[in-house]
Image 1 (cartoon, one colour):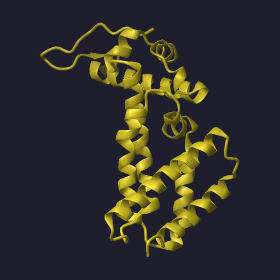
Image 2 (image 1 turned 30 degrees about the vertical axis):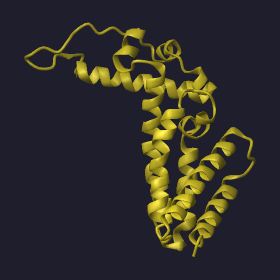
Image 3 (image 1 turned 90 degrees about the vertical axis):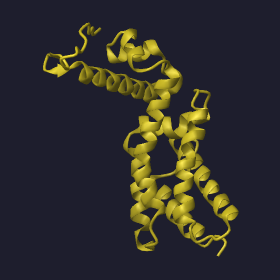
Length: 208
């Protein structure tokens, strides 16, 4: 297990082993988050405990509490980071009026889901289980709903209908990908892409 007794003084950051204390703290925090992702990939968020994360990261519990007040805070931070990574492909998916790019953008979105199964499991599957992520999901998902509302459904004048369409598509996408990732929906990558393209076509004509 690592130890780190030195502190930064008034004269500036102390250098040890070529790095400052702040840099080492950031590295430990990143190691804890990566360890949590590995555990999620193996057993889901239920496998993420303070002790398990510290063992995987080869750090003591002192360093866990240096970065996080609890296991739930660690999951909250990790979930929000992963949500930020999904913002770009989701924005591209909904923000174009060029129908010739529907398949390309659908493939980008689907491949983002496939890129790191650990991240996709946390973001799309784990909120459906009792992992303490409920409030985090409630706080984060409106960002994705707003993207759809403002871009894909901007043609709908009625704000209630525009909101209905966005909420329905956001929850439908999340449910579809969750079922696909957990194995209850058996479909190939190309079938998922085809479905995303069909959804874009169908939703563009909604309330027209």
